[in-house]
Length: 110
Image (cartoon, rainbow, N blue to C red):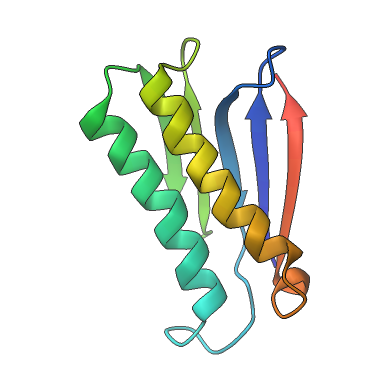
């Protein structure tokens, strides 16, 4: 199962996330749940880096399937929109009866 913890500040703004695990929906290389979550997560990290001035922290381990990503300051409007979009996609996946058992989404105030 993919576990994603979304970090939020006291204003309920998303400030980062930690994702780990493997979906187990299908064999490696054929797992559409893992691929969809990976695209949402990696694209968000890349887009924040390319299109914003936000300072970030990234720790990843490909072998373990771990990405721990956070903004160092309050999110810019651009970063906030990008994180909102990622959370929307992950929420849709976790609420879908076909995929809910493969992805766990939680929210944590930091």
